[in-house]
Amino acid sequence: MRSIVPFRLGQGSATTHPGMVAVATDAGDGSRVYVSDDLGESWRRRAELGFTLADLAWVDRLGRPVLLLAGEKGLYELADTEGAIPVQNLVDPAQPDRGFYAIDSFTDVRGQTGVIITAEAAAGVWMSPTAGAPESFKRVRAAGEDIRCLAVQYDGPATYLWLGRAVPEGSGTGCARLRIDDLARTTFDDALMASWEELGTGWGGGSCWGVHVTGDSAYAATQSGGVLRLPLAAGQKRAWDQRDVNCGLPLRDRARFQPVRSVSGALGSDGAPLVLGAGPEGIFRSTDEASTWSTCTARTVDTFITLPPTWLFCSGEHRIEVVRADA
Image 1 (tube, rainbow, N blue to C red):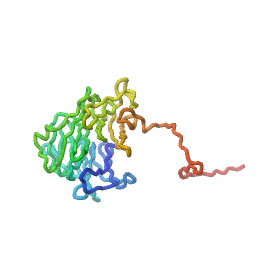
Image 2 (cartoon, one colour):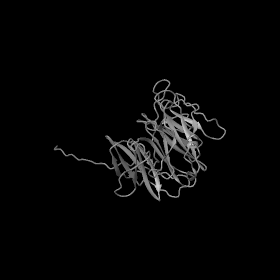
Image 3 (cartoon, rainbow, N blue to C red):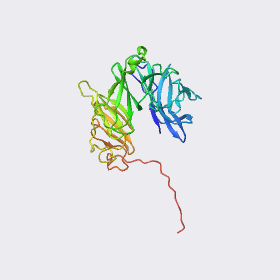
Image 4 (cartoon, helix red, strand yellow):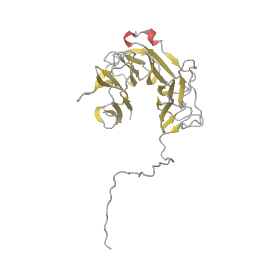
């Protein structure tokens, strides 16, 4: 599986499509796209492409969901109508088949939808202020960095667009974010490209493969540093903290963690964050702001399941074959 994306409702949005989820899977030399309208209970194959998809994003156009498909042969879009096929969406007129690593959609405080996408071959970051409409993309970050992941943070009236950088070796350079207040009034010029906030202080995890903002902290999935945490609350120092080798994440050697490929999370009813990290050895979770971790995918468990005295375990349907033999 390459990507799984639910339809998310952003700030100021007036429409929503509950239950919609899209998945991109590998299919030999290409990819298949499946869509569910009921949170994954059932699936429909919507498209098959002859190249590898890297990421997906939903947008709402005039009340109808549209799925954006980013991959090694460019950006395509798929309407949510019977018989629709993927249609190329031109991002860079100078290179129509430019490949892309990551894509995400967001809304500003007025409910206007934007799309951000990062190109392969360190070719920069592009943004559309009009829900990813064809030929609406503008470059918002110059070429020269290998950017593999994106994330969206909503903080009051502001929307922050995050990116994470990959490096071939070394400790890495961390993340950066761009503030968007009102897409309709955003000017795509050199001043906007220079307004990215660099967030690399304290970084020591090598490449960044994923970033997620939950509560007043950002969490980053890294190549060798586990899951790093960056405090975002007012008055706190903006520096990534490092994980102790005994935190519970699997180690590659004595000083380095196994790669963490993605990170996600949510706030519980008590306001405490639940953070999930996924890597080669499964999914791990933390309930103390990434300080300690425990596995969610253990093959064996030692937990006893008990029932009240008046209950019975109910197993699934049994099939019994009666064999008769002569005495």
